[in-house]
View (cartoon, rainbow, N blue to C red):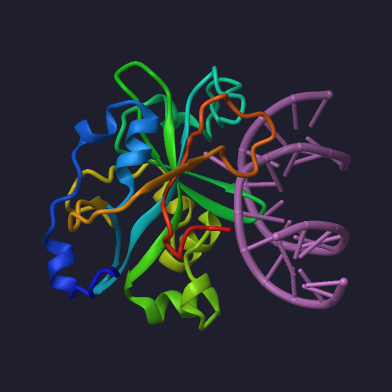
Length: 204
DNA sequence: AGGAAGATCTACT
DNA sequence: GTAGATCTTCCTA
């Protein structure tokens, strides 16, 4: 069953997930981020979507991780406090990650796809398309739609006043699918990609 | 300076 | 669905 539409007031009143949520194993955080909503505020306008696909990344034991070759200026958030944004560019697209790891460890979760909720018209304008289906079904597409750029790098998303937050939404029943991470040349043995089974906004 | 990169778009079969 | 061109940073030399 599809979710029903919600008003902006409902969404924006939900408290963001706290630091404890992110201070755990990246794969657990990646799995539990499914079904949560990303809310981006810009002035009076709200752009939001429900997370339907994620990937977990670790530190120096993960060859696909941006933190694999040690601490650099651009990957610094991965080594620091959980619950902050880690944003970097690949092939001319900004990718949205949330720092997630237990105390003293290194890791992050890549948000790979959203189901659009609020501000659909603005998101379509940002993307230059009119097809809902392709609006946010990929990591580079959703950042373009939500106007997420390097400006938000390092942002603390556990504060309700933050320009971008992640919050609990309705409890819905869904099956979680897993697979190996996409586009990764040297992957770990575990499957670290998570998605809501059957959701049409999962990337292909 | 040069190249790789956790992707996307378009144009096909 | 798959193939090839192309997008812009940051890293490494």
